[in-house]
Length: 570
Image (cartoon, rainbow, N blue to C red; front, side, top):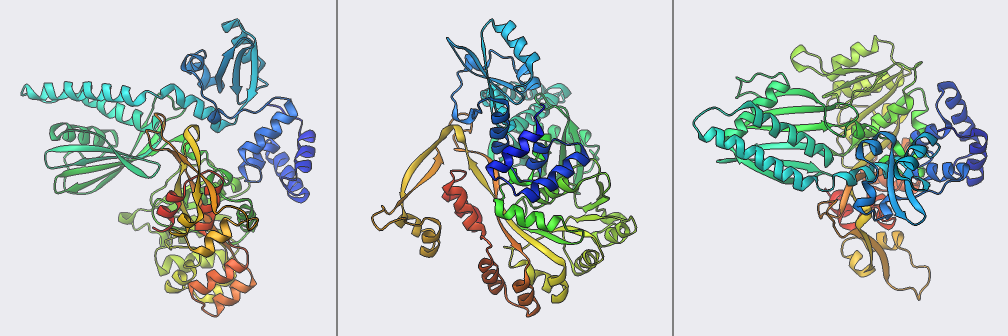
């Protein structure tokens, strides 16, 4: 899609989305890397996907539509076959006397428009939609996948059990179909993990969707053994080993995926048999950017100030599964240029990224974070990602690298941004080294997003909020404009529908607190201030806490208060 970049720059300036200085800097980068200006603004978090669509629509003279706000009849949706819709990124949204209305990611594709006019024999009305909205439209084609899956799995399991009941071994064919169907259903429901858990008499399959585990099906122990064997074969693990943990990797091709899906497999022996956890690393998961992760504009600016420096340290903190590595990789995507040498050492490597040299920790070969970092130093890197700072040795090397002209990104287990400082002190890092090397600390959690198609609003009493939140926080986040204003506020929730499996949620977004180092904080660190003292100083400097960021997303209708409280208090 070609857009007049002069008109684009003028419109961005008029809308005051970014400063003229930032715009000029990004324009230079876009020309140098031969990337469209608008794409670069989105990927670096200066402009949201929605804002980019509005800008494009203004320039092209095309209205922008939100598929999440539309109820599309099934017969209208299927006027465009799924294969065409997926390949051309186009969704049929309505059909009436005026003709067929379609949402397109690229409304300038006249060839597709001509094809649809000839195919339908109807006038065409074209609207612009974001990539996320098009993805939502494509998901409508598989809204009955749950029923289909139940029918398929019931048939496969029944066939397998019948063959087993005849006294013979299970046939490979039904087991292969069971495993393939599990992968397909997990992918189509955007599950991050598949758990296959043996019990006393049966085995249970559970999917983790948006951070929550759901029971999917159960089958006999005999089938469980065969499924485990099939997965071991696919991941090239030892099928005769049942007492030792094993890790492997599978690459599968699935319907609806433009590229193979990488699956990380972990097998551990339990008292009831071997338990398997499969982590799906689908391509759509990798299409992240700082703006889509949920960072507020002021936090994006703090992050940009840190990663633009040629040296220093960026730390991401939070519990396991909070998206720390994803945040750091979103930064690496921005920094990944042909003239930059980026190296990572991880355990395990979460995402394969072109143009980045990635090292997998291997304890058996004595390749630890510490030994790997020493080797990386001899590889002339510009930017280094350390999967996790776990011990004194690793922290010392990472700090020294940040002091000697390298940009270092790493994760650390800490409850919040302020607690990271005492954690580094506990690992033996001197206060002056922390103060001089750490540029920014990001603490984060993941909350489930409200499913937009079934989102509803309701009035909630502020007194009810005060039972869950401090009065000070309620007053700050829900201020009254006048004394006569009612003691209520409007919040949102998902009422539940077939597309979100009745949960009211779909997808996840981060809640963050971003601590940017300044002189006041450096002085406090030098004085070995406590975590609470550091947090107080950071808040005085403009830091928004994690729960405040979450409540702001509640006000915007992105998530629910229950979800923020559940996650922020973990």
